Length: 85
Figure (tube, rainbow, N blue to C red):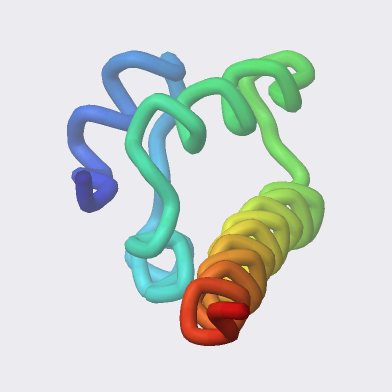
């Protein structure tokens, strides 16, 4: 699900400026993950957006690595399936 900034603002209880809304990479992160990242990194209604971006990139990297690992496992299984005795 794509992050909707209005929902994120409402659920996390913060106001985001247009420049923050331009962080397009965050659209790759599920809304509930962004809400968790943002809401757990708020201090006095301010937020370190660099930290949020770093955590979002980390989430994306982990998801990508998981997908690559699944593809590798499938490829190995396919290879083994084709090597019949």
